[in-house]
Length: 174
Image (cartoon, rainbow, N blue to C red):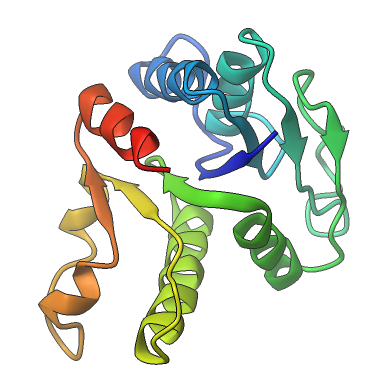
């Protein structure tokens, strides 16, 4: 089963609009026939995992036990846990296992994941190699915008996801 990697906050709480949105993203990923890879913990990662799992999709959690010793392991929806020794290894594995990457709202950790994936795509683009589809929740565009040395063509490596219809369109192109 092909996987879509989803980056998202571990702080997202059940019963919140952000949790419901992450769950809806997971359902659409599952309906499109994909499994999911996430950081494997709670919050948005759990919501996405639940949505995919309910539709029979494979859920891979790429965890980092040494970085997060206070966490009790992966969320209940994870079928396969792949522990990573470091943050950078974790992000690299998340990027590598998916046919595409998506990013929900989140904090510094989610931003680091977006920037790493974006940078890997930027390097591939500069070298004339294929890039991996990278969809980001439209809210991230308030943070990531042209300026300094970020040109509009660099932003074109990101696909804004402003609605579930945008997500469906993104997934249909994979």
